[in-house]
Every structure is written in C-alpha cells, then in structure tokens.
Image (cartoon, rainbow over the protein chains, first blue to last red):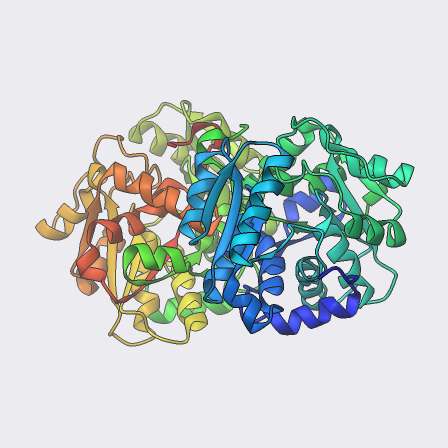
Amino acid sequence: MNSTATSQGVKDAMLRISEYVHRTPVLSSESINHLTGCNLVFKCENFQKVGAFKYRGATNAVLTLSANELQLGVITHSSGNHAAALALAAKKAGTKAYIVMPNNAPEIKKLAVEGYGGIITFCEPNQAAREKTANEIIDKTGATFVHPYNNKFVIEGQGTAAFEMLETLGYLPDFILAPTGGGGLTSGTILAALNFGTSIKIIGTEPSLAGDAKISMNTGIIQPAFPQQSIADGLLTSLGSMTFEIMQNHISEVLNCSEESIIAAMRMVWERMKIIIEPSSAVPLACVLENRSKFENKTVAIIISGGNVALNKLPF
Amino acid sequence: MNSTATSQGVKDAMLRISEYVHRTPVLSSESINHLTGCNLVFKCENFQKVGAFKYRGATNAVLTLSANELQLGVITHSSGNHAAALALAAKKAGTKAYIVMPNNAPEIKKLAVEGYGGIITFCEPNQAAREKTANEIIDKTGATFVHPYNNKFVIEGQGTAAFEMLETLGYLPDFILAPTGGGGLTSGTILAALNFGTSIKIIGTEPSLAGDAKISMNTGIIQPAFPQQSIADGLLTSLGSMTFEIMQNHISEVLNCSEESIIAAMRMVWERMKIIIEPSSAVPLACVLENRSKFENKTVAIIISGGNVALNKLPF
C-alpha cells in the first residue's frame, strides 16, 4: 500500500470505482463569474455519497483489497468525512470498518459514522492514543489500515473527482484550485490533471489560520498542523509524506486566505448557487476573491470538497 | 392575455423560452427514499434564474408581447419571486419592468428587484393601494400588466418545469406534487402533464395555516387568503379565477401540512441533498411525510419551486 501514487493510478481508479460513486455535476454561476471577473466552474463533491469526495478514495482503497484482507475489515482514525466514507465503503463491500475516534468528537460525527455502520472505538484526544488504539484493534482483528490521505489508493481515488471534471468540461481550464488539508485531494488532482497534459496550473488552497502547507512548500519541510482555529475544519491536518512529495514535484503554489473571506465565499455559493458547501469547500473561492487580478478573465475550476455542515451552527 | 391556458400552450412555451431559461436538473436521494418509503424525484427550480420557477412564466409572458407593447414595458405588483423574475425577464428583453411593492417589504426583496433592474414604486401595504398605484403607472407609461399567476402565458410558462421534468424522467410518475399559492405552478403542471396522458395524479399542496386552496376546491368557491402566518411565504395568496378553473377541472385533491413538517422537510432536503430550498418548496415533501401510506412504494415527482431564503433567519 505504500508504493507511489501515479497519474495512471487515477485512470485505474476511474475504472475501478465509477459504478460505485456518483458522477457529480460541474456547475457554474453567472453572478459569481460577474462578481469575481473570471470564469469559474465547480465540481460538486458535496453531492457525492456521504456528502464528500472522501468516498472516492475510501472506495478505491477498499476495492483494491484481496478477498482475504477484505474479510478482515478496514480501520482508520479520523473523526471527519474519511471515517464516514470508509464506513460506507466497507459496508457496501460487505465488510467491517473500525473507526478510532477521539472521545471529544462532536455527536453529529459519531452519528454519521454509526449511521453508515462503522464500529467506533473511542480514545483520548491525542495522536499517541489514536495510534495505540488503532494498533490494538489491528493486532486483534487483522484489519487493514486505510490512512485518510497518505495512501496511494486513497490519493488516486480522490483524483477521480478532477479527472471526471476535466472529462465533463471538454476543455482545459487555466487553473484548478483544491482545498488542501492532508493533501490527498490536492495531490490526487495533480495526478489526474497530468493525464490531460501539463498546461493546467494546480494551486493548493488553505486558510491562513491553517497555513502549514504553504510553509511546507516554501521550506521543503513538512510543517506540523497549526492550532485548531480555522472554521475550515477539514483542512487542519498537516501534509503527509506522499502527498507532500507529489505537491513538491508538480506545483509551485499554495494560497492562503482569511476566515472572513471563507465565510463570504461560503455565503456567496449558498446564496447564488443554492447549494450547501462546508467551510473547507469555500477556501478555493475565498482565495480567488483575495487574488482577483491573478485570476481575472481566466478559466478557474474549483473542487467543492463536501457539504457536511451543522445547520444549527452556521457562521451567518 | 385573458384567454384560457392550455396544454398546447405549455408546448408552445417550451419552444419559446427554452433558450432563455435553465433546464434544471432532476435529482433524487437514496436516503430520503429510504426515510419516506417511496421513490421521489425533485425538479430543482431553485437552480433556475432568479432562484425560482417564476422566471419561466415571466419570460414566457414577456416574449409574447408585440414589439410595441414590449417597448412600453411591463408592470406587476408583487414583493416576491415574481417581481424579481419579471424584472430580469424585462431586462433581458431590453425593456423596463415597473414593480409596485408594499412599503413594508423586506429589504432583501427590494435589493433583489433592484439588482435585476426593476423600477420600484412603493405603496401602502393593502390591495387597494397596490391596484391604484399600478393603474396610475399603466396610465402614464402604457406598460402591460403581468399578473403573478392569473395570466395564460404565466401559467403556461410555469408548466414548462413539469414538462421538462417528464421529458427528463422518461417514465410517468404516479404523482406530481406542486406547492400551491396562487395556483400558477399547480395549474401549469396540470396542463404540462396532460401532454403525457392522463395517468399521472397531480396534487396541490399547501400549509394548513394557508389552507385556502383546499377549502376552495372542496366548496367550489375561491376562498380569500388566510392571515399571513405560515413560514411558507410564497404560498400565502388565494387562487385566481384561471388557476382555480384548471384545478377544478383536472385534479381532485389538495393536501395540507403542519409548519413542523415543513421545517422538518426543508431540513431533510438541505442535509441529505445539500441543496438550498425555500420553505414553500418543502411543502410537497412535508405532505409526503404526513401521508406516508398514500405514497408508499409509489413514484412521486416534486417541483422544488425556489431557493430564495434569508440565511440569517433560518428556522433551524
């Protein structure tokens, strides 16, 4: 599972998972184009199963298991969309997903994982406890660990979102912007785009309050995650070794943006496009809003990563 | 403009307006099907221009004007989606829209109409003042009055939503449910469906707190609007003579539902489908939730009428 993710691997993933995932629509908005001065298209993974692109990578990873591995189940530690995605992917494949979750995870996340049939084990909310708990379960069950992003098949699966988008568009945009947390979506998008040539500029995007990827790229050293302060709760992790290497080799830029811009961008999409996106998904548009001249009159494709929001805790 | 709306008129409207309106998607949700026990599809007019099906009827009405009429402009009294729709339809046709609006209309509605280039005249918030003000403008400008629903071309234009939906589906659903306010969408849907035979049962739906259409159908006499208490603010008007006649001739049923069910249905669509719908659009699903056995295992098509919601005043 630790071999390198490749652009051919994204094509393989397309064949492997297409009948299991939604081919989500690519939408645009005249009024947002007018407001931003560029031609934007949005690949809507908020409409994906479990409400996030994470279902692509989880499904691809599960489908590459041998019959014996599959029978023993899969395991991850996550409290976010990857946990829900792995739980559903395992359920659809007829096996078990063990999810290690910090005991302070929000109730709504627990319910989502349970709703998809995941078997939750709670642990203390720190990295050492997570790993210890996961290893104990692996020792006992033989389950295969599926990392949220530092995994060849996960990265290649996430890349299918951009691959589908480029197929649907029928032209090559000037830019693709993806939200960058652990880098699974960003590196998968890079590999996907390489199948269509090298003219598209891929840009990673993250909140300034979680700006570790930008510094990692600038310094050449993976930075630890920032304190958990951004509203974009899907982007608070640091890069992985595999995702960082792909980003270093193929892209030159990560943009940051303010919390105010994230909220403004999220509201713009809700109001103008009538679709529900989570704060992390608003980060690429927030970066467009903060870098108007860079994108003016360009074609800019954005991956909307997900739509899982607590409706009783909206920022507006 | 006062001749009768017909099913042929809906087909004519399809040809007339199709290049000016969005062909909106028909979406479905596995999890909502699971929760309701029936097979639901949703025609998503929340993705229509101005965020509502009203753009269809307004566009159809504007496009049927003579060159001379067009030059003199159009006028309506409305503070809702029809006002915004007529303003944009007029702008796209290169003419003026005069909008008579009560002086207590919410700021957000004024801004929407102004944003689409409508010329607003405020009046006292009562029917007599609205009509007097409109008539004064008509005397002065020669503008053509476009009623929000009691107008042949408006009704036929609204019918194109259901016509497109039935084309897209490729099969005939057991039921089509539409939200019923003035009855423009409901009567247009009836006429649209007649082009596909008589097997589909069309049902009007409204909040119990705005239950005038149900009583109108039961008594054979158009009832005045109820006091304005329902959250479904698009459905507070009484039926018009033209819409009532079509409903009387072709459907047997209007269902009512509680405010609690409307909010639950709205939340269900937001959370499960990741799309933004206004309270009025949640009324058909609310009626499905309250009449589970009636719709069990049936194919049920719902027209989502719009997605214009004040995000700072959500009911959850």
